[in-house]
Length: 367
Image (cartoon, rainbow, N blue to C red; front, side, top):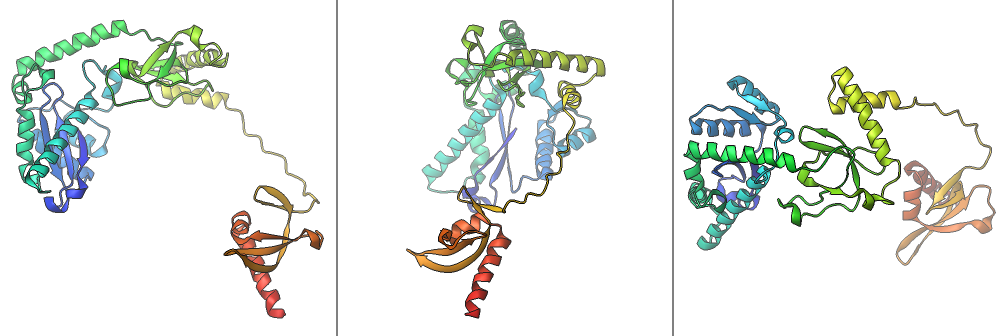
């Protein structure tokens, strides 16, 4: 499920510019629901319409939205909040399937508008969706999404094939804790051969479900959890001179600590990390109070340190730029300096700059 937007054509389509797209992963069958807004109530309402249309029991739903959770509780539907942790990407990326379907239906809409010289398409959207669902797909053996969607035996067969593929795939994964890896930097492709990976090298610190936790050369754990296809194993010999010598050891020590805490306290990996940080984080030391210096107060102007600005003695314009003649406190007159007003306004506090301008104005009034 995803949303796509066609805001430029909102007025021509009864103020409908947001479209909820739902796709059945196995059959590739597409469903689209136009919406006027993307509030939680509207999204849940569209989901309800979709499930009523199916005329069957909903076994499970994935999502972490509170409205979705409430809907699941009300309708006694199992809610999963992290399918990605438990699921491999086997013959296709599920999110990629939705993205491809979105691009395809947008192409259908654009072609319709060009062919008919119009920006109104919402009335024919059901026909465009039906065209998509009745077009043979090569990934379905040249069957149509509607045919596969109505054939439960074929769907069970496809599901078993994917499950077997996942099991076989797991046996081929050559990643384990402590390995050096590069992380994937592009997200648009599905095949590993044409993917691009980082020049930086990381260490696999742990495994959560079917995702990998990696740590950088600075010893910091990367927040994102990576699937196997998002990492490329690096020969340890290549790593020499690229990582600090202690990085891997630090990752291994930290991982052992996390596993120990997680086992003893029954914590998750993330909770165990936080427990360790509480123990290892040094107590905050209150810095001693600084003695008041008898040295003259200084200001920093354009990166240079100067004594405190005492007053503005005059102002003038040079080539359209306002300048002030600055007198420095306890400095001789020959050190007075013309500086741009803009520079002074940036480097002095607003109150100090305003006070200096008032002083100059008052001095002129007295004269």
